[in-house]
Length: 135
Image (cartoon, rainbow, N blue to C red):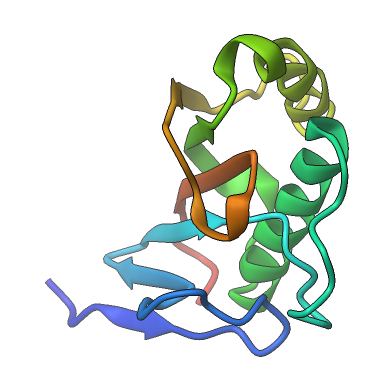
């Protein structure tokens, strides 16, 4: 096994806690959960509504993936955390589904939680796999 790589991506949001944006080992890439924060201005208020927050989370996740020369097509699994599961689940799903083709959706877990950092309504993390020919 190769030593793990701990990635900090320059264009990704500033971490809200002590963590790496992603950790990579043997082609597996674990992308830390992203919040709907503005990666260019950490002081900007969070977007209003679950749809806008979900789009912002995907934008941040794609920034991390892009910084590692990966994309959504490399994502194999996702975990979604919602603070108001019953209210936000359906609307979040509509936005989530728009990012993946119907025949190429990652495995997924979605759970309700009592709270998220920065009072966000949604957080999503990914597990991706680097193709053997990309380095």
